[in-house]
Image (cartoon, rainbow, N blue to C red; front, side, top):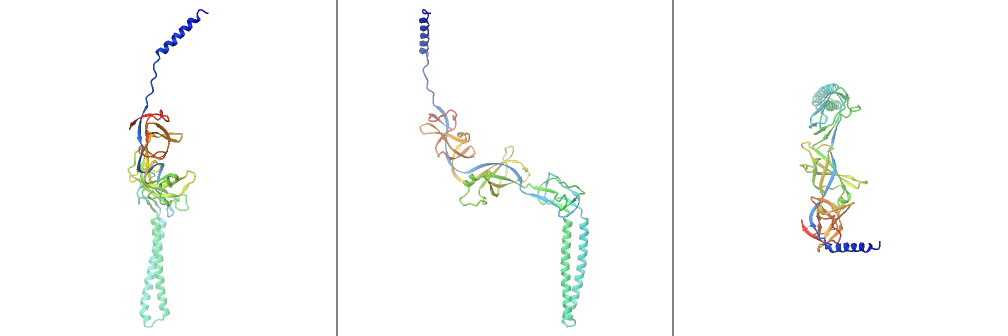
Length: 371
């Protein structure tokens, strides 16, 4: 064993020495090259996105004004109906009888009025000659006036009876889409029956959408002292995007603000309307709506590409004048096209990195490439 130990040590020494002799010299890592852009200031309105569903502007509930047996139904459930289109016909026989009776009473009352008028007119010259007493003249006059009032009262009865007959034909009061009816021909319909409502017509000329706006954003956008209900100038450029992502050709308009603020969600509900002349929009349809909120204000903008979001914290890499990268948290507002509004954390003209975020660390030197 003693004879071999020196030999082994010598070989090891030669091996280590040889490795040191052939080791390559260390080459420093070149600085990271990153694309950058400047934070810019511009006068823009806050652009906010809402997710909601479309609803009918209003519904017309079709209820019979008279009771009777349903004779005809022209309703086509789920199909468009026009204002003035005939929907239902109720049996009018009993009501026609009432109308005939009222018309007969009117003719009788008119005849009595004619008789009373003639008696009054004949009595007038006699009263001037004192041929009849003043009491008799007053009686003739009172009878004539009573006959006139009777005619007026019976005419009202006739008019009412005619309206009742007219109510047996039910027309659509609006343009819209009709719901199905449970009543069938032969059913007794009207107030107090199981068919007190025949159908509901949903207005389709314009559809509404309810937009829930966070109160924090609302308070930022409104003018000082503005009333809660007075939001006519709050929303502008209201744009609707359909299920397939296409932009709807008609702009929305502000309608009104719901009175109460949701205590659980902390939101204010704004109702907007979209024209629907060709019934392209459907009730219940999903809608993505974008709108400007508030007036134009000078804001700081950066490309969305420069912002990183991790666990709800937004940040950017700011590049100093000496090409040193520094991590900085920022408060981001709503998107504006390809940019973000920066509410806090950046000033106009500061340079932010667009690329290389995963490789950067605080204090690192970089090579700038303008986008």
